[in-house]
Amino acid sequence: MRDVKIALVGYGIVGHGVVDVLSRKRKMLREMGLNLRLVSVTDHTGTIASEEGIDGEKILGEKTLGKVATSCMKGKEAIDAIDSDLVIEVTPTNIVHGQPGLGHMEAALSGGKHVVTSNKGPLVVSFNKLHKMAENNGVMLKFEATVGGTMPLISLVERTLVGNTIRGIRGVFNGTCNYILTRMTDESIPYAHALSEAQDLGIAEADPSYDVEGVDAAGKVVILANALFGMNIKYSDVEVTGIAGITPEALGLAKDKGYAIKLIGDVPALTVRPTLVPLASPINVSGTLNSAAIYTDLSGTITVTGLGAGSIETASAILSDVISIYRTKRIDAIF
Amino acid sequence: MRLSMDLELLDRPGQLLTALQPLRDNKANIISVVHQRERKTPRGNVPVRIVVEMDRSKLEAVKGQLQSSGITVVRIGEVRFVEDESVVLIGHVLDSDLGDTIHRIDSTGFAEVMDLSITMPGVDDPSTAYLKIRATGKEEIQKALSILREVGIEKKLLVIEPIGDDAA
Figure 1 (cartoon, chains in turn yellow, orange):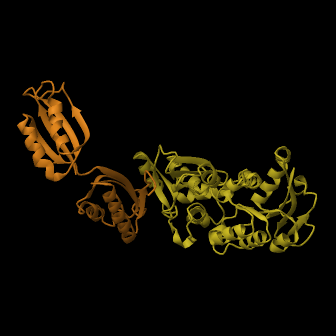
Figure 2 (cartoon, rainbow over the protein chains, first blue to last red; figure 1 turned 180 degrees about the vertical axis):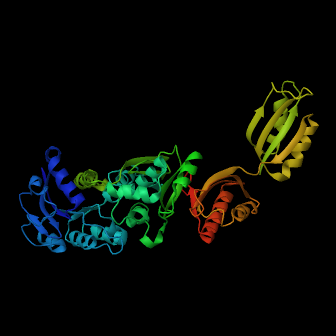
Figure 3 (cartoon, rainbow over the protein chains, first blue to last red; figure 1 turned 30 degrees about the vertical axis):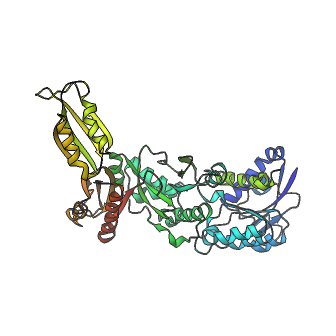
């Protein structure tokens, strides 16, 4: 049995999902030979720590750790102080300066701890530095959940399609925009109406600009470009147009001519913009789904679709990353 | 260059092979052959349309060879527009002089607008134009799209381009 001490940093929607999934899957993981022990959970109110492992049932009902915290340690302080093998970083994202996640990841990696994250900001701001830091410290940095949520994209390219040259990736990387565009097309309703509907359903934030202006999708383009194409680009290198200018009439006219209008991110073109997609194209997905077409030299075009967000779905991508760290067999480690 | 040839063959065995020989001799790459034996011309000949990719300088040689083998050459024309793409423009499409927008494409010589649909929801609301553009090749389609992109910036129109078939 491999014993792994996990420290969770961030206890919002995704953090709750991680605690839930770790507790639901405990038995299955043990059968695989993995004893994942959640030794600490930290949020902006403090930290709850337990060497034997925190019982998910006891904290899942709490919105924050305010009432259950066993210490007032936060962020980097908690990462440094608590003995762990792996840090799951799921604090709120900031695409401009990457904090507080960036500091958390640096602290974990430099302390020789693996990092698994769904937090885009730090990777958008500082991917190459974090990647080098992980290498120098002999640990791994895994981030499947940052792009396309539960839709397997990074591991698909890095593992399953290994040996192929990836010529490009294009896709629907933001479920909120896709939901709004789908509703506008289906019901011929104006943008503002579809947006307020998405806000009522919790699909869009009160301040929707991060999604609808294409910022989120562009962040994903940066991560894919740096992680899978070996580029060294910043957010400002991506040419971004959002969906606020799209009208139901335009969607209707495009549909009559055999096209959907989707917000498409493109690597290595480094663009995010509304694009005509043939109705029959496999990347033409509706609702909150995400999709990606991967253009390869040997395998042709491969398309994946999946749920791009959600508490449990994102936690599922995080869990896969955690397991993959302990199942990795490097080529030079096979004997 | 891509050429389309309309020929008339005598209704006799072996005529199609005879017609293809000059193309083969002049290294023309045959794209398609439409041979309609059941649709004879009033003279009783069989019409054939052949599309080839070939060097323009060889055209006269091919024509001469065809005629000397007894094949009637009805028409030979350049197939100019082989690629087409769709584009959607959103904004004040008409007020920003749609005629001029189309002219910018048509005046290139290598591309033209072949289909146009417009919806106008209200006087002050942004309207939408759907354009189908055709051009002499893939590269020319890309040039036409980049012209529209510039027009979009200049006239404050949102230009929605087609997703490509394959990665760049």
